[in-house]
Length: 206
View (spheres, one colour):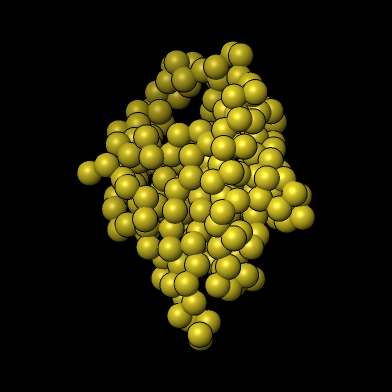
């Protein structure tokens, strides 16, 4: 089969639940997985164990690294080394408000917070959604080029994953908060790769 026609399944995994006693916006902070998060990662690993995974990529942030390593242990007994890709990192808006509760973020940055909630397509704080999706799709594309025809796992964060699915589905970024239920902690979203073409196979609410 020619490279441009090769088929593969791409699994976008959100990290598991993490220890967050103060209920703050995590951003890039190195918060570790909670016991619940480790169970979620194990569950994801058990699902992916049957999927003939060729490589595992992860955001450099602690909670995604821990999730990816647990998945690797279950899928390959650790033989698949986690490949760190900074393009899979959390949104820069989350980084901008990290350490604050959502109420504190709203009080300190009211305009930015309201815009992010109501019209994320127009949000430019930290980075635009266009740029965030660009780096996510670049990470996926680079992985496909390096492992053509192989099923791949990318461990990332909610907003980057959902915005990528919206882009692939040709939907507005303003649908971000309408479809977040598709990407709870520890969840797996599936995309099909046919050559350079990506097809979203995960249900997103209308």
